[in-house]
Image (cartoon, rainbow, N blue to C red; front, side, top):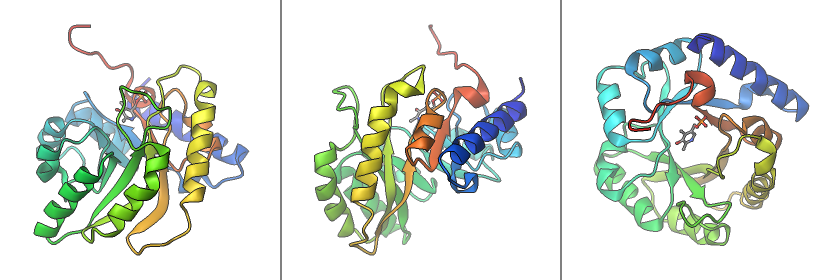
Length: 233
Ligand SMILES: *Cc1c(COP(=O)(O)O)cnc(C)c1O
């Protein structure tokens, strides 16, 4: 299967999942999780119509960006962002998905302010309370939103979650349902710079389940590009 065929197949399954949930497929943003795929393969995915490309590693993002890999699509950062790398990502990525601490929010705000721009971010939730994963605990979200509301050079656009890797999406249903509830609970607009526009959840193994639970931004790697081959494995 080519990348174009894979993107078409994913779009079809997104449309079917949206239809089953009584939703408009056009409201679902398809982010190609393009880690470990070179500029040429990223361009193929963009030509096939993905809405955005999501990178995990700052170094890889900068290299491929310098090669013009992302032209024609939005560039998102979907990995774990370290504070000392904020300067490379702010203003380069249209959306930073995995913001997982107040100090990181503050660092993004400072950098964005110095560049006279407003950075869009999503707050990451550690929805399965996994010790190995980053993200705010659901009960910390209120305080995180409040902290973000005071930072005028960033805009919270919604929530993101990375539940456990699974083969069958059903396994993550409980987590997606919790995310949906959290999203709904925080939808009421209290601050100018905090909006619940996006819920970023769903990967190759579980995006249809995520869409059933209200996801409107899915991050798909393997189903578009094929299996990743990690060096040394
Ligand atoms: C790699 C990655 C994805 C895509 O994973 P697949 O299972 O290959 O679709 C999505 N989100 C994040 C944060 C990732 O790192």
